[in-house]
Length: 405
Image 1 (cartoon, rainbow, N blue to C red):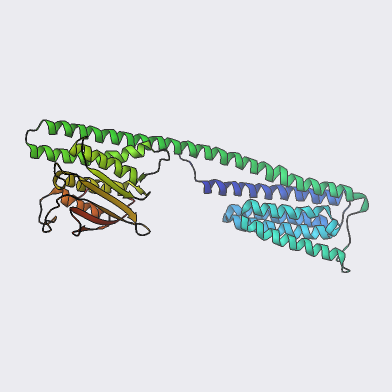
Image 2: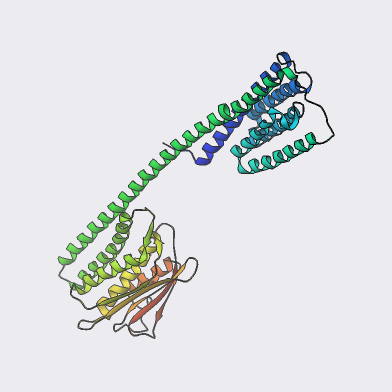
């Protein structure tokens, strides 16, 4: 089921509310005007304002079906309502008129539509109230109270009914309906999110299981091969698969379902695994980590893990010889908005300076340089320290992970 967006729901709710308010106020104003004229014996401006407002507002509402401009329809209605309410207020007692509370409905309608309109009409109507107060306290008078004395209680009652009906029967009822609809929509969206989170978690779990199966097959294959060189190549491929499987395992275990990996625990787990895999459980190799608490995307961590895998594996196989205590070092620090620097290597015997990806057939060495380029980074070797050390600057990648050429 396709769930509509929140903006679509809100726009439809506002449209329905404004149209219902317009139709209701037009009908009620027409009825009120007729009652004033025929039953309350109110002559002059008041009943005609009611009837004119009802007619013009009804036409304005019907025209919405032609132009579909909700802002235009709403503002015309608000202007008509303010003008009508001000005129009726002046001719029915001024600041003491019971009809003055209709101005508050205009402000309320503004806030229901948008905060900007609400603030605008609040300021305008506060100014109107001030002017009405000054008008009543001044000497200049346009007209006195045109409501007959014997009809004033009925006029006050009908004015209150008009205001209460619009606020409660129209605004309140429809706002409650919109709230229930929004609540239902939110629950549906939440269910969809939970469903997708469960599916995403299951995907990471299955990918991890599949990669572990591949790793196990490679392990079995390496044991069945007598040629040590070929066996080591297969073991190297196994370690690469494991480094990727660890990423999906960490995503599977996360509770927040973000596609971000905590870098420090991942690197620690990967380095510990590589040391055990190459040197065995009883080894004297020290792993020194200096990594800030970064969370990087899966598209960054996978190639980064492969770089660490190749570097540490080469260090353990060729740099740190048997019978010597060794140390591997990995540090990652942020150097810019989206840029990071990784410094990694070992204190082993190193390899000659003239060996490079261009002059060597080593797949591991080529992978390190190619993966650094994939991370939109640069790589350089530090020749001042004993062993083999690299400095790699890279940036976080948020895109599909592409295979290395």
